[in-house]
Amino acid sequence: MDRDRDGATAAPRRAVRRKLEIMRGAAAAFRDRGYAGSSVRDIARRLRMTPGNLYYYFRSKEEILFACHEYSHDRLQELLDETCRGTSPPEAKLRRLIHAAVHVILDELHGTALLVDLEALTPAHRRAVIHRRDKFDRGMRLIIEEGMATGVFKHSDPKLLGFAMLGAINWIARWFNPNGPSTSDEVATRFADYLLAGLRSL
Image (cartoon, rainbow, N blue to C red; front, side):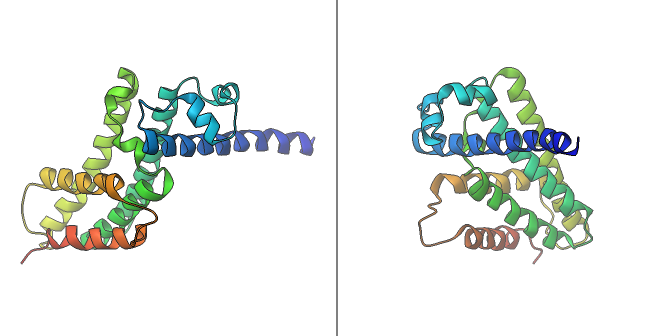
């Protein structure tokens, strides 16, 4: 009986791990060949799977892309919620969030999914992703507003500042070379320094 229960529990965990492997393989394919230039066969080949095996987990390439978006936003929202629950001052909260966002973008799914044109998604999936993106943006904006209210950050338009910061962070995946001279951690630290310097009150 216990063996059956353990087996029933392990099977979903294996499926989740396998799906994450597929998403990572797809992200690498999208990075190298672009979304339009990558086929399900290309993704399966990277993973040493047959296309039929891949279709067991995802019904289409678009569904894989949407899963990549969902995974990335799940991680970002989790990090935002943890940061907002803390009692650290606004600058420390924003620094932690910038670090975390850079690591999600560069180290987890290579940031590729977040940079793919949303037009590649179905209308329903596009609306869901935009909703998740806007929710994260509002959370970051609240931290910026908190810093302005306490005098740590100079007063400006928090919405524009949030857009500028997220735009700068998201663009890192366009030029970052994992084999280059800077690690993702070094990039995260430097970006946090630059972005926070622009917010501080004089």
